[in-house]
Length: 174
Image (cartoon, rainbow, N blue to C red; front, side, top):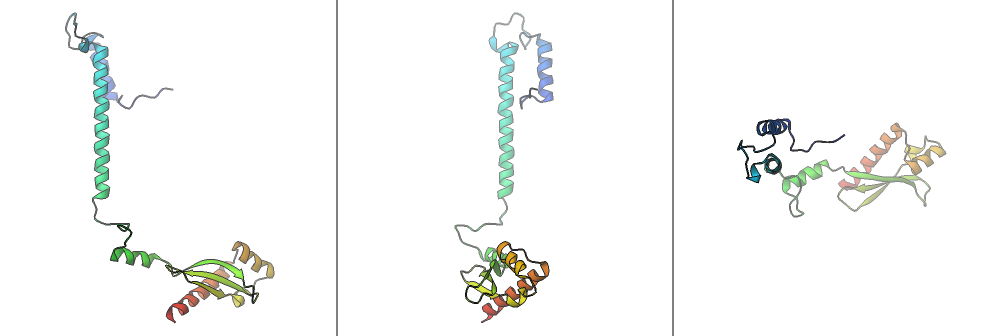
């Protein structure tokens, strides 16, 4: 299966066929016994196809430029310039930021009680929140799976989220 070149649109192919039928493969301008090589069908269509290719390139370039200008003509900035936030960009960023990130669950080596490790957003501070009373209804195997693989039932996951939120709120207010 052969693919057609991009310049070979149906209207251009029709034009080539009518040009051949009219010239019968000889001079495209109808001169009898034409000695000018550029008027012969083969050479003429090569130049014609080269013009069509150049026209297609120019059209594609114009479309790309119009699309580029349409994308960049708006005055809204999504990213800060030169590494600095504008006042509005800063507000939007911090409003979409969560208060904390849950980095993981673990067992304290000192007290042998489960805890959650939290990182405060836009900060280097880590908080350790004890979860002993929340995980108490779980079996020993379930606790191990929760710590190792993060497999926690949804109701307990909700309780952990509430406890973590309370700890972060308490830390930020004091």
